[in-house]
Amino acid sequence: MKKLLAFTLPILAASAAWAGSRNQVFSDFVTPLPVKPGETLVIGVVGGWERWDNPVRCIRRTAIAIKRRRLPGVHVETVENHKLHLAVELVRRAFDQDADGVLSPEEASAARVAVFGQSLGGRAALWLCRDLAAMGVPVNIAVIVDAYGRDSYRIPPNVRAAANFYQRDHLFIRGAPLIVAEDSSRTKILGNWHLTYRGRTIDAADHSNTQRIFMGAHTLLEYDLELWRNVEDMIAAAVTAESGAPG
Image (tube, rainbow, N blue to C red; front, top):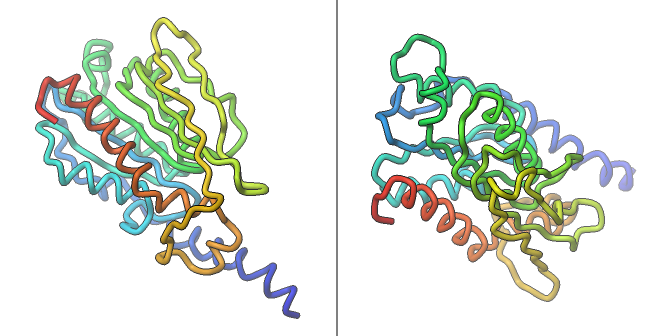
């Protein structure tokens, strides 16, 4: 019975998180639509089945940190990785300046977007970039962290710069070790940085014992404050460089 409980509890916990995370709707976004010409939309894609608005988890924490910088003309939202259609609709409405319900080629090319994601949200962030490529929307920067799941991890040419952080400490849940540009003349790969948590002490007290035991380094990475400060700085630098606003 103990072995059965040890096996089923993580599954039940994951199922509960799944059920609780399926409530995000378009009206949860707070960005005024459409945004003003020249403004930027930053979209963070959360991992697993977590809620888009959970301030404990790394993507939402980082989104809040970027918001607190009060960067001029920068709007920040988070979306669940299985609700990417909401993010696509958000981009369409945000840059549809004439409000005719269609993103014209001129409106699409003038859009300013940055994307970041972690775990399944890292892989989904690349899916979002590909959806935006099909719309003709450029992505200033895409940052993925410990991206998990099958994918080519090829960065589409509408992304101007991309960065990848990953760990390989966990036996099963390991981040994608390499992102490559489909077109190196259009996309700059800033780096593929390997992180390790062997011998390091990371405070992950906000996660349950079950999560820390079964997720290991994949969870510890969420609480690596230096890592997430780097992600925050990268995004802030990219969007302010594009807008010309001070960082």
